[in-house]
Length: 278
Image 1 (cartoon, helix red, strand yellow):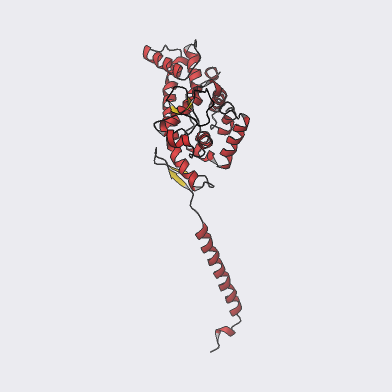
Image 2 (image 1 turned 180 degrees about the vertical axis):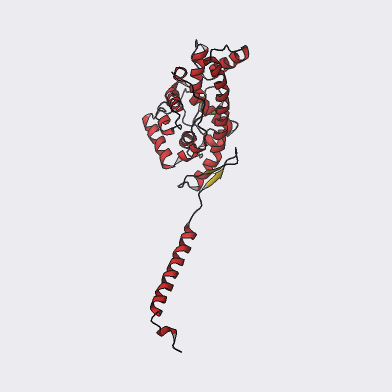
């Protein structure tokens, strides 16, 4: 019997074994270096939220801390918006609101700083521009910039992640570099939920951010997802840095892939005819 090594098929078999060994090595390397998508579990639901692919560990912790209160406050705003839409339908159908409904509208008008002397139809139209969500990417980007990713003194001591001021003595933390004679303090909040609610209310009510609300309302009318990059283009009055602040904010949103968090928001809303939206 001849030795198999002398068979003409031996070189071919050797090549096949070599190729197979190479494939196994490649497969082992690929599997060992493959990573599962980075995720964080939201405290507000059972859904899993995918992390940006380039998120570092400190940033992951920041997102995990800020995203749940942002989601909770947006859920509160959506609930209030649905209540407003019920009243808006009645007004647009020509029905008279009862005393309780009138009181609710008046309370919201005061809270969200709607112009005075509006009739019911004008008021619900104005409030629909004010009572709505703030994209998570925009809120996360602003909180990251204003708090140095949660490392600032005001974030640590006062839960202030958005650089908000107050003007009543003792209402917050006095900045070390406050100008002589200035009275402002950096607002103190009892919780992150309170801080996020105050920030979103500021965006939804302050005259300086009417442009932000207009862009959001246009997206709603066109049944488009809310675009944080477009909305942030109207935040020049949020910081003394103006357009430089906007540029840095938008760069932060893009680089850190923050738009992945916006996909978690429900964007469907009840729409009205053009007369109601004008």
